[in-house]
Length: 201
Image 1 (tube, rainbow, N blue to C red):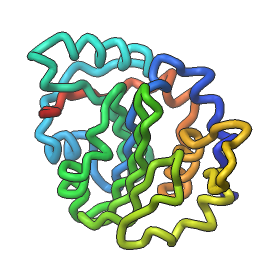
Image 2 (tube, helix red, strand yellow):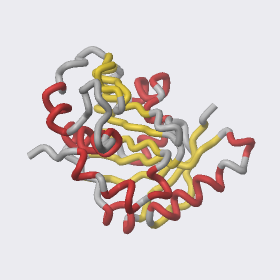
Image 3 (spheres, rainbow, N blue to C red):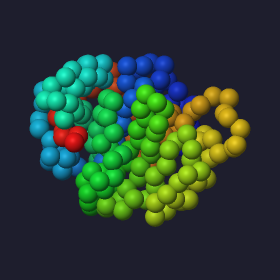
Image 4 (cartoon, one colour):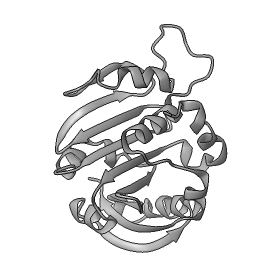
């Protein structure tokens, strides 16, 4: 059964250090090392738990004129999860689409200004892209393929403001629908992540 945005409401409550600004990406069939290679990254020391990743990512901003960012990765079945605290590489089309060659790329992002993006690509083709707060503004080669799923998950399509904004949690649920990979509190707290730094400009 497809999860809804309400099933991911815990993220903002339990992980406020990253919930304000993040990018989560799932890439099928690539190892963390393979993904780092596609992104022309440099390996960094592994880190346990998302709190340590967030601390290291913000420390990285004070180095090298802020032209690199720290990313954290782990393997989940046939997928690699890429986490960027305060990053957006996963939804940057000029980086994500080439890196999606031969695979599936599902990414969602939000920043401190509540600007967000959901991006689904297959083998360098943009299947779907939209702002989770404004799901009516979809684009891509198959912008309506997931419309029924999006409505069930809880994206808000009505003109009136929602009682509770579940746009960001709904993006997690849509990513799980596409990949079969669930993000859980235990995963974020207990995983020892493979880390790297990547060029951001």
